[in-house]
Amino acid sequence: MSIWLWYSPLIKAVLSPLIAFGLLCFYHPYGWPKNAIWSVCLLWLSLGVIYTHIFEYLYHRFALHSGIPGLKVIKESHRKHHLIFNPLNYKTKTPADLKEVSSRWYIFPILLFWHYFLFVFLFSRQASFAPILFFGILIRFLAYEITHYFSHLTDNFFDRWIVKI
Picture 1 (cartoon, rainbow, N blue to C red):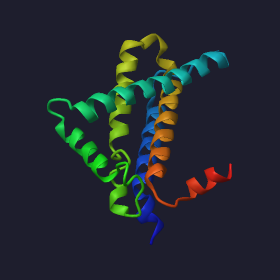
Picture 2 (cartoon, rainbow, N blue to C red):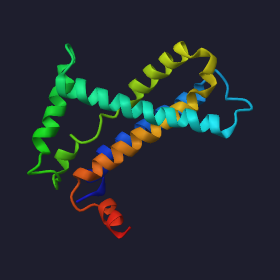
Picture 3 (cartoon, rainbow, N blue to C red):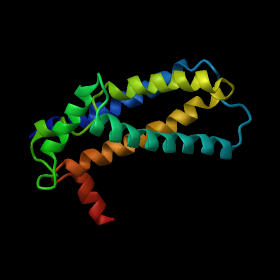
Picture 4 (cartoon, helix red, strand yellow):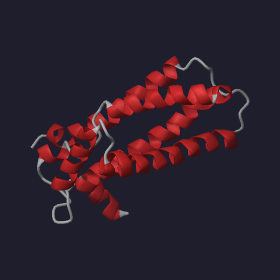
């Protein structure tokens, strides 16, 4: 079976955020932090990771499990994920099932740009730190997507690598 068949949902879920973040950095009009000490940059990076963790929890808890009026399609998509992947069937060998693991390719770019403009609006004096904050967001998002994908894929190289460690 072709590698593309197994990994295409993951590749799309990883490439899309990388391209969106690259575009954000390229078009970022507020300059980069000048004379910022590394600890301040690390703080903004960490805030991005923490923010994404909290956002993902709230999004998962309320949008995916409780449902938001007008956005029932999100809850139904997540419900389908839980119908396929449950305690009796947590991993799969079926490529079609893997389409229900990763976020759709367009989700991260939409959320990234929406949050970017909100951040710049609310924290305009710190706008030069936006790329660092959103790099933390990117790192957290990709770590989640990749580990979540491999947690559902049977007999993958990531599991074999982890076992060796």
